[in-house]
Length: 547
Image (cartoon, rainbow, N blue to C red; front, side, top):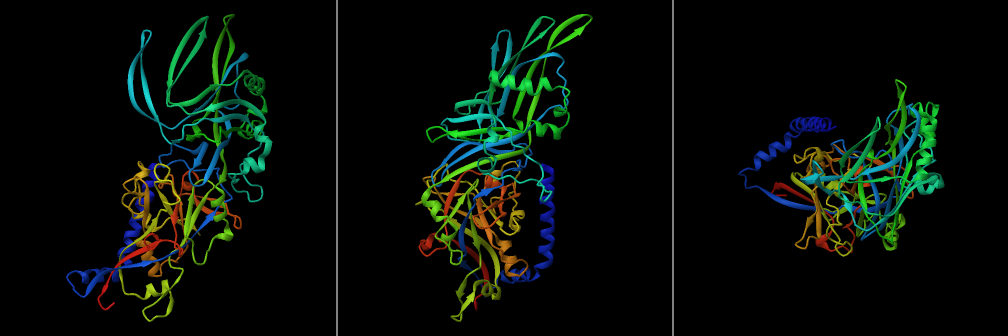
């Protein structure tokens, strides 16, 4: 995965460089004349793009991306109270699959325990030697990554009876599942059988120590193991009885013989979250590492001697994962975000960016008219194409409306820009030499600048550098397509998903926005926006003094 992404970026950059060298002779020649020629001067032009917001009713949440290292599946679990937008509750519905099909459980098998394990994303920060009896062990101290809030939530584990099909029978393409499907379309089937409930779930950074006793020929061997932080619980006796019936009693049956039969037989696990006292915590998970493990004993006879042995069967979370998202928007913002309240012709004062099943901004760089040098009204793009300018830099500056935003840690560090018709990133993305797979927070920062903060650590603005994109528009090499601006949890992820707005289906939205939980409010181009904060595209250019 990592090598593949690096090779793709290198290939694109090489192609761009050759294209640039072969197609930009005019700009090169003008640049050479500028040096030492007093008839040229540097100037700035500020275009005012038209901008407004779009709100999703639902977004696709199956097949969300793993990170660029290929290790982490992007699912969220918990409750997040956004200081601007309101509360979002994230639950997970997933298929499972045995670690081996058509399993055999031996003679007279008995299910000893059923253990549910849900690892968190964590980082080891220190180790220390500890003495356990006559054995020296290494204890590790961890820090939990990507966890927000510290209040408890109610967490319930259910056996689902809703069949998650792989393909849409109407299109024969991969089935699409949405953020509101669990609540709106699946109903009570996902809560068929309650397996476990924790009324005060808060993720802990402590490592998990397990002790396993194995009996062989009447002798008991104890094994200790230290695991990374996770929710690890033994399911109650009712669940153990159910799994014994579903698995041990079904040994050799068609239901356990192949993947398709099993997915219809055991249709999934639903991890449901509910707020406690209207509060909670939110955690990002590598859901692919979640497991339900069946520990069982069986008899084995050799030389007329019968002994008891132990084994296990892992049920891995796999294939289809759905993030159920239920967002209760702040009533004032919900009213402002209604499609009929968005001025798509003249633009809006505020741009609402919210991850998950939220919203993004639409920006038309050169969609309006200006008064030209002859005092006539002219389309801004036509005016700019007539100018004999050498474009040195073009940057979009988006100020944060600090009157609406609670500053600090709740503000998203990164935003993302894309073509809303195709979902493609701008060419400037691939020309950014700061791209880094290992550190997505500081990756592509020349093109997609990180949040700029004031002395109080409150966000002031974001800057998006788009010089090559503007050059290509002015040279007529690409259309002035409308652009989307969204929040992003990881700018290295450039895959897209879809969502439905009140009037349009299958709108494109970056996957990195769906797996983001934060939001912000940016100033647009409306007449009520202070001039110093108004959305602008700053174009720095060189021209002759006659111009």
